[in-house]
Image (cartoon, rainbow, N blue to C red):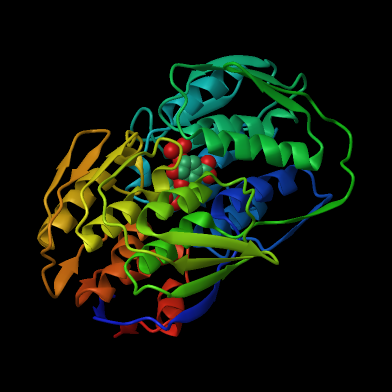
Length: 406
Ligand SMILES: O=C(O)C1=C[C@@H](OP(=O)(O)O)[C@@H](O)[C@H](O)C1
Ligand SMILES: C=C(OP(=O)(O)O)C(=O)O
């Protein structure tokens, strides 16, 4: 389904409710499968979290995880440890191109029995669940932090826990810290010292605990972008967010100060306020927050500001090659973009072409990142339903705040 976003103005004040973080939800859903004593609230309503829930309770031996990268990686570790179960874990065409070799090799080192069913290094996988008898492993840490989180999530159920040595530069560190914080919250002991992470085994039942998932900061990024392009004095209130978040994308608060956005936290909500319009070029390293790269690039394009985004080496193996996708679509709109395999440079320009049809490449973040441009021009978003991967009510929420969408 293609949709047209007509050039729109937003209400001066709006309130939006986004459900829980997809990253936190997918971790906690797995932990709840290991520790049923946990109760979860404000779980993400995203396709990726729904797929995770379904997979964890499936009785079938064939599990299709579609486009959900975290679910694929986390479930590979989970099913490797489920003694006596044999599972085929597959996904979308793109998922079959997203590498899992670093994780599979680490699990095999620990004793897992996993086979590649099509191409070496990628899903689909056949996993013969068994007791993993080793507790020490090293793995490359610069490809995806999801491999590390996957191992940490099952670690406390291994007989002797886990000692994980991270080799090389560590990418997306806040996501690893999020995993460790959630383990800590439920009472599993772990430490991260230098490049070694240790998780203690836990055979005891946990104390029953209710965890309320904080809402999703990556989804909030589109409102930071909308406001950066909106008139002075505009405000958007988002619930339920905390100033001290476990989510690395909360760095948005600092980054969007650059565009004149102030963020005020009160009563579990945050209000974004457009206070000024500084139009200076932006340079930012996003190795800790890769999912907001598309949002920021489009904000800069909309404002006619140049930007240098670095630390983007993981973007090539996400839902699509996001560097190429960004370059293609911004250039259709009249912008000038140069990319390497880990950075993006956008030149300053004042031109935005009208009625361009934006390709979304099966990538929810392509659709959502380009939507704020409707405050400047008419545009078409192709295959707009892709947003359900992380934020199913995105288009309804934009309509509620004044976007004209047909
Ligand atoms: O652990 C997680 O929940 C995630 C980690 C990041 O992936 P990488 O570590 O592969 O960059 C991020 O891009 C992804 O959307 C979610
Ligand atoms: C990269 C993402 O997700 P995943 O890797 O879980 O598919 C994302 O949501 O931007």
